[in-house]
Amino acid sequence: MANTKAITDTLERKKIKRAARKAAPAKGPRAGARGENKQKLKKAARGKSKR
Image 1 (cartoon, rainbow, N blue to C red):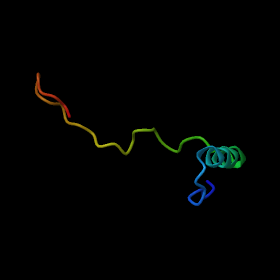
Image 2: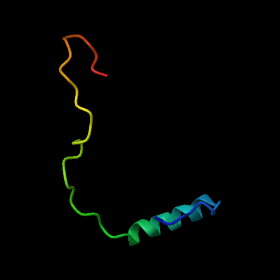
Image 3: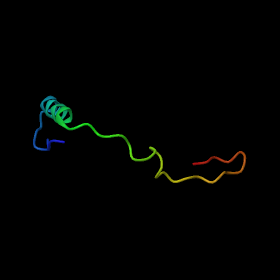
Image 4: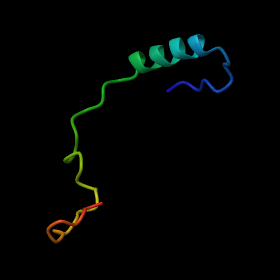
């Protein structure tokens, strides 16, 4: 991603960011499942909120 910290004009900044995103190479397929590093929850007692 291009460094757009110095640009104060929002629209100009968006244009540059979009162009940088378009020019960046495509990301490959995922190595693992999306939530594989999420903290797993133990089964809670009935009626208790999980989080």
